[in-house]
Image 1 (spheres, rainbow, N blue to C red):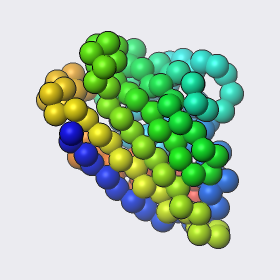
Image 2: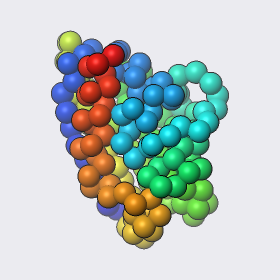
Image 3: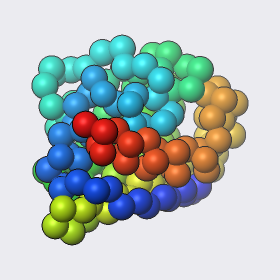
Image 4: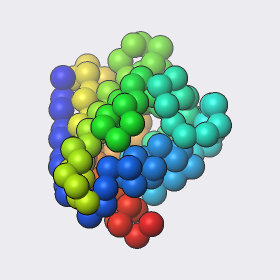
Length: 146
């Protein structure tokens, strides 16, 4: 499985970071592969069971399914075009937060099945090796400017 990880320290407590990452309407502010959020079910903060329709790179109608949400600690989801979900090979994304008082360390990991990774790159136009560091940088900027 292709795996790309990046980590960053954010000058904000974990609750503030959590508020940004679970606001589905702000997803494109920090999750670098996502350029547009087209729909969120159910409305409200993202939680286990939330489903989003988004644009990832140059593919509209991609799906994000939130699998796990531990307040202030962990958000895990599957993402990709409908075809990747149907083949049971979506990208798996993990965002872990480590609270350190008024600072939070955020670690994001993108995991892709090697059989579908070249197809995902071709379809989205994205290099996911670059998306992990881009995402944590955007997350830091989105939280610290809020």
